[in-house]
Length: 399
Image (cartoon, rainbow, N blue to C red; front, side, top):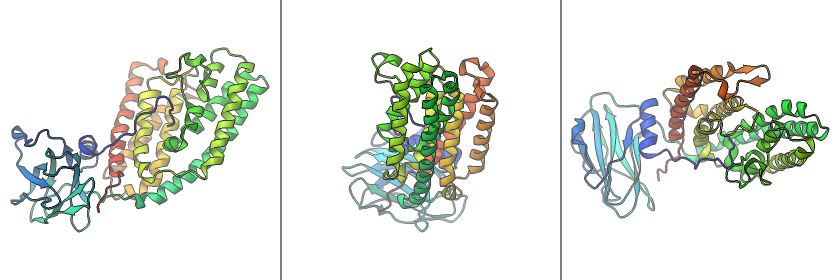
């Protein structure tokens, strides 16, 4: 979801948080931080094994493998940071990972191991990956593993998504031109009707916002950080027009912003064919769209008078589905709870559609407490599930 002025810092979901969500929703292993050079959690009742992280002795220390839940204290004996995977040495399917283990420090990895082969792979920041000795376990049931995703795997999905965005931008140009024409002829009632379809079409393109660059600020920025707020001369785009349409401004006052909006979206469309999205960011964007929805749309922070935040949330949901549809061939073999994700996406759509009444939507401040709790619950669940998708599609360096 495009949000200049309110954009979140891109989220890195490796390490403790990312794999906690993967454990809960995908079934992969939990990577959690441990502080200090000898970090242990003796009170957890689980067996601990200290494993060395270094190019020369990667994975050394796991000498007595037994099935069940294990806690590995990964101790980095080098002078640089490293990440560690526990994987099947043949398929390279990952059972768990810990990122950014600092020099001389220990982080913990909790995983369920069972019948199969295992090896630790140490990936120093500035050196080649090293795979440790293979450990074999003859009994028990292992936890699920997921095949790693490379940037190469994501190239075709990213190209397909980028083509879809190009088509969407053409629709945005068409719809914003209609909006501008309404304002040019003084039909502000028509402009209020036509503003929402144009804005929603742009919002559906949410996973591309980073590739839009500065144009996103001109098109969908807010008044955040502007000295004069909504009346600041630098306030532009959809929300500037929204403010004017729902705060009694005249067509004369809105002609300039409307013309500038059409110019900005047309330039973005025309430049899009030369733009290249980063394939490695596609899974992360699938998560960030609805994360931003929760933080900005469902709090009303982007409402400048139209009361259409729930409509925007629905457009963001549509945009999330578009990203996931390109990732689905990779998801089906990696994300065990994909049917659950699909079910929650359907539930979120049905929940929001209950607030649509023809061409109008219930404003946030008119939701009952129960309705608000329902919306918050379904979107909170989706954000957690999509954090796991982001983790799975974080390309891993394996060499």
